Length: 80
Image (cartoon, rainbow, N blue to C red; front, side, top):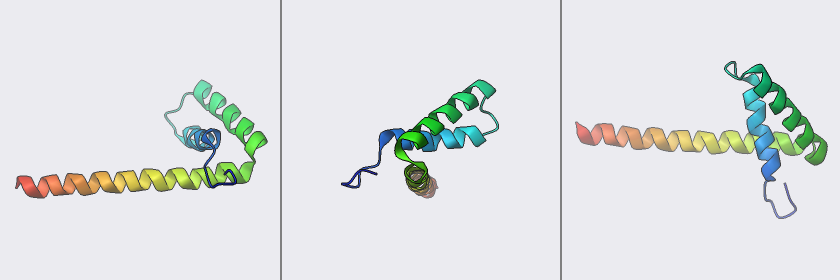
């Protein structure tokens, strides 16, 4: 995170790639590339920054998912 609280783009990308490494549907080549990207980001920004971005990413995806479910639920109720 920068001194003004901005999340580093590359660390967010590395956080997403961390997920891709764990995903069973990721090909071995994509997994290898993701591992390289994560390692490079950790070398540049530190493991703490990549971890912080992983938490940020999970929060953002959870909020988006929750909002989508709420919109879907409202549509279902209004259609009935």
